[in-house]
Image (tube, one colour):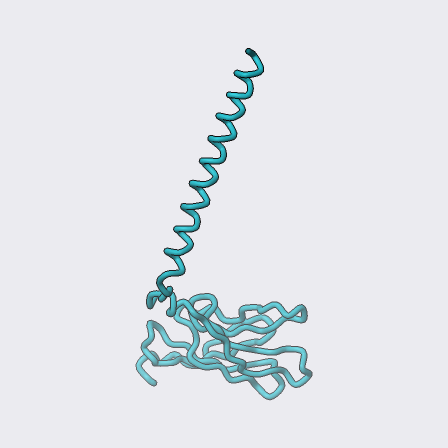
Length: 142
């Protein structure tokens, strides 16, 4: 009698597990068909998050390469380190408008405007440290 009740309990457990697995498999298959039934079209906010990088120069000795990118949220200047990792040189809140490297690659002139005004002010930058020195302060002159 005891073995019959033990087998009955095992059958109930096995049947319950089989039923749960089949239900989960069916709901998973249904969710897969729902996801693949209609094409995914991202919204405009997703497209606005796509960044890019633009090469802007390299030093004469070939050890430093510079590029601009908006990966920090605003267009900034970066220098590739010897390990290939980008080092952010500029930290202007609204980003930079342009970047021009000197002949030797040790200094650069860049333009930055405030609030998208397109009234770029000029800065001299040390390309090793990123330290900037303002060259102009005429916010009403383009």
